[in-house]
Image (tube, helix red, strand yellow):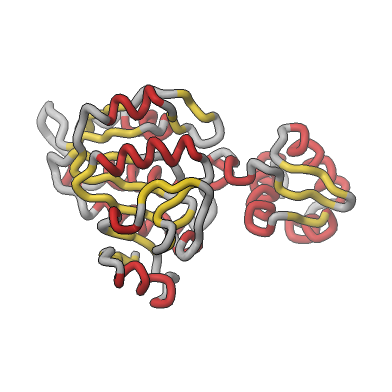
Length: 262
């Protein structure tokens, strides 16, 4: 694997998945020398992405804060299928809320390219409200989308705007649907996020929506994270992948959540 950026992304994916890696094993997987891997890990440590150990590296305390470009490749086909299924819930003229994250970014793309939501006229056929700068950047060029971006303080790692300036805007509007990406969701603790600031703005989005849709691949189900977004009673639909077996989805169905497998 030649390009340094490609190796860094691959190493970060391995670290995010396993929590740690050894130089020799990583060199074998990526088919480069151990010296190259050591230099790569030294550079990632300089960027405060990882913590170097004797013989390798561990993910540091901001593992969940890896920038989206390093997370996007994880479960990518599943996320695209989830996004297509989620976008299918939306009709022309709807007002849709989206929080930040790789799965909701995929939902935004699916919404933007869905033929029945397009328009040949001058006016927008879809309104999107988001606190995610990367989603806003992608949708602003879509003429059929009326884009509303919350205020707030930007979190560089997730591109989300958080804080009182963000939540105050949401108090003035209503949404038909909100698509919430989560770090974890289970029946007891509900939908959760690692960062309490993101959880707060995500909660505000959920409170303003007629339909709350959680989009989460099977790796997020039956788990919990630090800060609650909303209880499972507030979730109307869970869109997940086909790898989510009955043991993962049945507790949600029993709680009254509609399950869509993509």
